[in-house]
Length: 407
Image 1 (cartoon, rainbow, N blue to C red):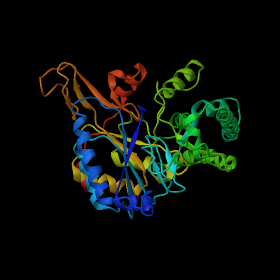
Image 2 (image 1 turned 90 degrees about the horizontal axis):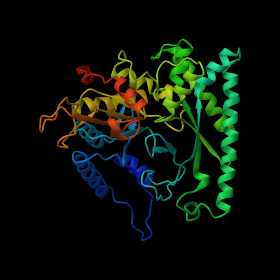
Image 3 (image 1 turned 180 degrees about the horizontal axis):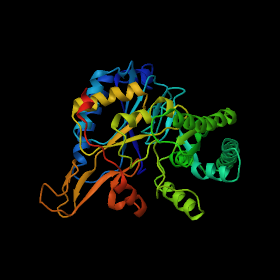
Image 4 (image 1 turned 30 degrees about the horizontal axis):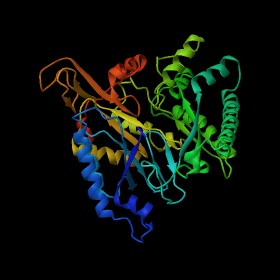
């Protein structure tokens, strides 16, 4: 598979998941060997990305936290060190080992420590078998314009989505019955352990339509919790022994652009050409780094059982102590999934790749340069983004480094 993931673990996370795991020959996983291999691989892969553009694997560092910091200080320090050296990966932070993220968006609840064939799922053969996305901005505007209670209308839409997902699952079962899903038959994928995902998009835009300020304030938090809590309510209502549902703020690499286009054509309020995939406005330069961690903190993400990722766009790389402090900020705020985006410079003339955001190539002096950053989850050349996504990328606010981070 072209798309693949790698999960790294700190020691307590590893021991929580695999402490009682036994291989067929009676041996157990060796933490010291794995720890050495993880560090060696990350160092090597970071250097490989200075030779060519490598989108995959998507890497996730899984860290257990307690009392406002990571438990394993060695791996917390190493995580900060890798960020300071320009490596691009996600960090998944949890106060227990009942879940981890297997890619840039999916949060898996671990129900047992069964062996997994999927590289990114860390010991569980799970994932999402279908994603059905609700355009919250359109739904809420439609309800308001037609003098309906928007929460009642949303409940109707969410209920309908669950019915459609349930029907989709029946189709999958029929396909398997006809021998058309060999990976399921071979045991690589377990249908009953995969999620049916209710995706959401246009949350920020819907809040703007309702006249709310998009920052950490009680009114905005109440709106977010009400809307996402409604999805979670129906997820629990429709759950059975064979059906699991989750809620995810989808990355919306393509659909964020389509939703804005379709809504504008139909006369709805559309404040930008691409709907946000965050809890803040991507071009907002009034929010500082800590503000964004708060907006992706525990109160805002508690109903997103399918996950969301904070993409912290920075103008330049931070120091190891600064990144280490931001791990503490994330642990304190309950921001469980995040990465740092600093555009890498690619010279179109000599091919040199630099981890910094530069105006000209430091190797040959050419100003014919391109940049590499995350479109949402995936690291790509900006020139390879769709036209609408290139425009969105230009509007992204890259925060200047704040010395106060160390305080």
